[in-house]
Length: 204
Image 1 (cartoon, helix red, strand yellow):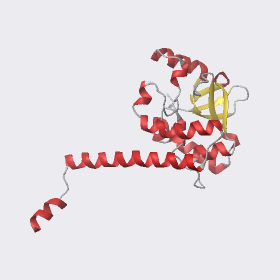
Image 2 (cartoon, rainbow, N blue to C red; image 1 turned 90 degrees about the vertical axis):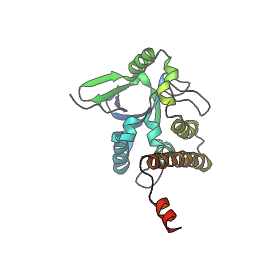
Image 3 (cartoon, helix red, strand yellow; image 1 turned 45 degrees about the vertical axis):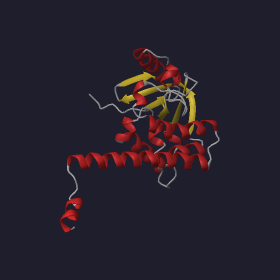
């Protein structure tokens, strides 16, 4: 059986390939945000596909989270760059077919309804909401990352992204990564304490 790849789909009306950045738009459960791959330059296309197929892309609750942390070949933030060039498109979920592999096709609106029913929530509850909102249980496990992504996404969707918005998001990401690094160092110390401190005591 072919390996399933998340976030990949096509437009029902013309079969053109898309990457689904957000399966559900907050407050608009019948809409999603996609990137039409044919609208991209070759370098942008390759960078997007690499991001989708990466572990970060496949593990992301919504691919927009991974895009908010990825860069285009020219150094621009992928999420912000695609918005500024009109590559992020809002479209009805019943017009998008998800194609996780060559043998499976499911309309996104049907998929969203099935997931919502399984979780016992509404389709709107599946959306990553704004920084002050709540998310579905799976998304809460990585809430700091979600807030980072939605800070960018919320402004992107409203068309008011500024350098200050991006800077705020980057600082938030840096703080989160710093905390993660400190935690990893503590865990490493618990497993195998560094020998530097021991040498210092011997020389004293």
